[in-house]
Image 1 (cartoon, rainbow, N blue to C red):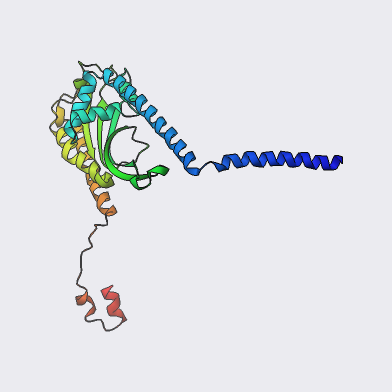
Image 2 (cartoon, helix red, strand yellow):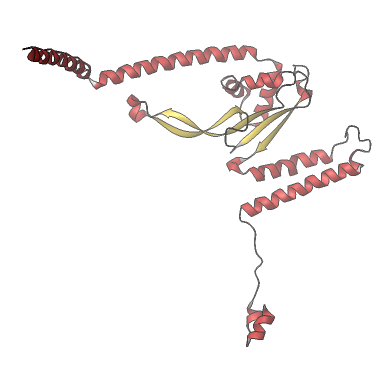
Length: 268
């Protein structure tokens, strides 16, 4: 009797467990999906709200120093100043700009402008949240070590450790661009040095403590070494691109009269 009672009790417990389990599976699958979509939608709205607040806080921080960077970027890249501003205040690495302005701050501030994969909602299957990745041009702040460089790099360089202010930003910060379209880094560097830097160096009048200027032997040696380096870059690029052309030779005149082994040795 006790054994049977135990069976009855366990059967009752098992029945309750099964019943409880079946209650969770009776719910339509669509209900669970709809719930997750609603939660996901609410989360997205909250994130969008927070992002908007952050953007407005950053917009309020923009002063003459930021305007100088924005105007240089807009001039160098085919974007309006408003587009550049929106990009900067939306960037996760916005704090790098403040670190660049700080006394003894970052020595360089880099921007990449190139194709990146943008996640877009798939209209044909939005219920499951699937996305498509499409390449799209984007301007973003970078440290230069985490993303592949395949487009254009706009850079700002400090000339001293002084704090960057609205009054000295144009004197203390240099701007330049480096084109690496389709990942042609060597070609971009070769063009940057040969067409921009070397002409600028050769036209330089003031060489600081060097009184003779460009007539100084050390300055001339430096310019010669830069020219030589650009030539090496050009040769390396051509080697990589398989553009070494071997001269065609007419060998018929060498093999026409080959009669015996000694003729072969002579021809060789």
